[in-house]
Amino acid sequence: MIFLKNYTSTVPINDTIHRIEKVLILCGVSGIMKEYGLNQKVVAVTFQVDSPWRENHNSSPC
Image (cartoon, rainbow, N blue to C red; front, side, top):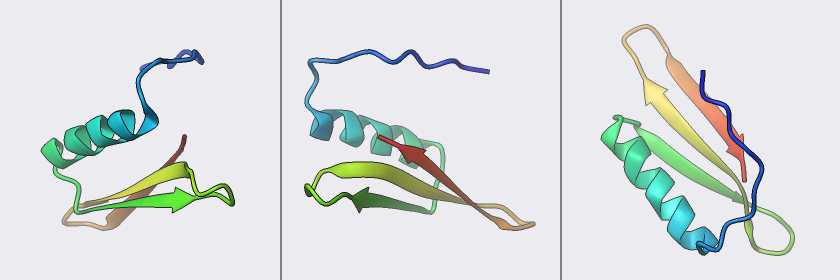
């Protein structure tokens, strides 16, 4: 299991989201959705992984 640390980054959020999307695509996701908050900033990234048995949707807060 990978543990993520809560820290501040100097990398712009759009660059970070783009990097995440590239990794998800390389892993074979079939869909990616971004949710936006009231301040028009991304608050979550949701992705879909299809398998022969079922569709699997995963969401991660930003």
